[in-house]
Image (cartoon, rainbow, N blue to C red; front, side, top):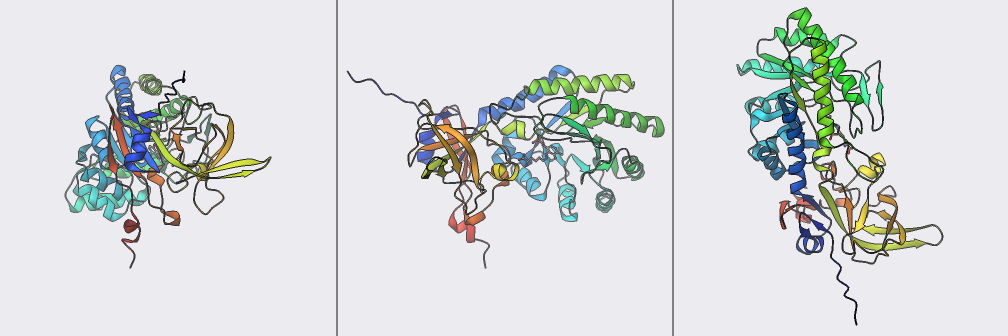
Length: 426
Ligand code: LLP
């Protein structure tokens, strides 16, 4: 008798990865669309349970294209944009301008004008130049604008810890302890076109705990309280930014989305109650946590270099051009053979990209089944800051991006062609 050797390949959104690769080629960025939607619903659901008013603004820098903006619209998210390009993409996709929040520490006059003309919901004003410039432009248009002031609470959160930075050494926002935030409030409230909704702070990214948020919220609440006592100001919105952690490898132990939201809600309720202030509308800006784990990059395995007694390199048909995070941040990823997911991992390899640069390594020391030319390597949790930070280094075209859900797939960003690469060349 012959033993049935039925091996199923890895699936994403109910679609076979072999089929995806056959249909769209490699490297390929595949999103499990249902998972992004689940994340959006988890954020919103947890806020609904808290009873607080809220907005969940997807930080589109993590990954944006028109279809992603449409998904965000369908899931009733707001959208955090940080450039004219992100704003343009959102507007082209028909994303409601009233739910767009515009961030950035050096918004140009053109970008501000574009956002005013689109009547976006809120500007997160970062600095004194912008405070003047935006108001002048709004004045010329006789337009009222909603603003938040970005402040630096002096809390900086890292993955496993948070630290208080006395000097608030950051390029973003108005310092709280040096009085600049208060000055900004004074200026903003004197300017007739401004409707000052509140303050914003973002303390870090890939956070695995909530102490940093609680620390920041306590400080922000103290400031809101002072502004209320001194100037009778009501600041109805508190934006605590993004930064919720995700799992890249087994070493990462993020909290559940609902746990982050519960901690933030509890902290806001506590500190506002302590200061006898009415609860604010709480805004958050998750980027990574919305899309990272929903994304998988599929590569074709190419050459193999075995250095006896030292290391085995396997090479894939992409690399730092589609995922610069390992090279830039020493970020770590997990990967598997998509075409033979159940086979025993017996070979220790390091995964190299194809760019002309030694630093173009995707994963060091990964156990895989013995690999051959043509195998499909799936690098997991690549959905955030991968495609959005992609480049054409070495004139390598960007991969295609596909959404998969319920056994169906569709292209949301076409693969770049060589034609695309020379399009702007004279
Ligand atoms: N809000 C503000 C004001 C931010 O600056 C950021 C991220 C976010 C929200 C979203 O943070 P998230 O939820 O995604 O952690 N390229 C880096 C990440 C840079 C994050 C910059 N700001 C990376 O690949 O790790």
